Length: 246
Ligand SMILES: [Fe+2]
Ligand SMILES: [Fe+2]
Image 1 (tube, protein in one colour):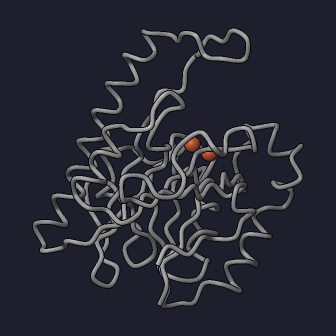
Image 2 (spheres, rainbow, N blue to C red):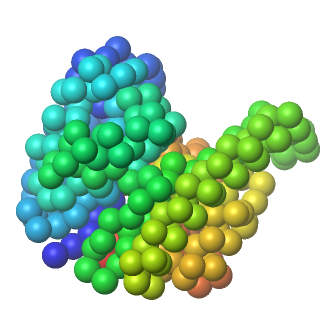
Image 3 (cartoon, rainbow, N blue to C red):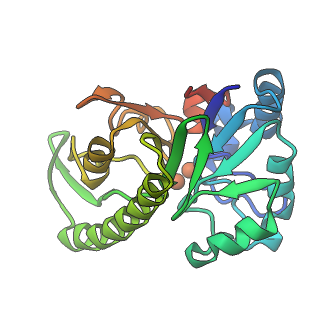
């Protein structure tokens, strides 16, 4: 029994492809088939696979039907996190999605999933992504209004993550793996409300995605930081091979 994670499948079986980079970059060529093959070799039916957001380019559930069907057909128990591109997943309708896909997919937000004696907790997260103003290759300033707006979204996501941790605590869990779609810190930070929560609740690992392309892979924490292990699992970073978490 193993726990795996990967993010950012960005499927588009029905919807129009939104990112031209997906067509140009060789790592995205036929990535659905590559990922499926690697999953079939690696993931056993008794394993758990966490998909850390940005599942589909579809703008609503109808446009994601084939993408979600593809995800359902992957081996193991599938747990999904909400990514910034997951327009089909209204934050207020997580429970409805869990009812609709009961026994097939589990949508992780304001709740938790049990894995052995661990609680898998998570939320989309958020982080300030600029605009940054550069001089001589260095960041000298940034858009303060955008930063203020980001802070509101971060606070809301921190509330959702608290609900996830607290639900697990209430049920007696004391071991946690924490999942985010966004990286836990911006490129300006080493610590954030999310790293503080991981430390406070004693999460052993923080697993996040969202960072695409070699120039973005090292935007946030990797490896051990204040006693917590941080891992980036975006699909193109992992070349579509799920990372073993436990
Ligand atoms: Fe993404
Ligand atoms: Fe994303």
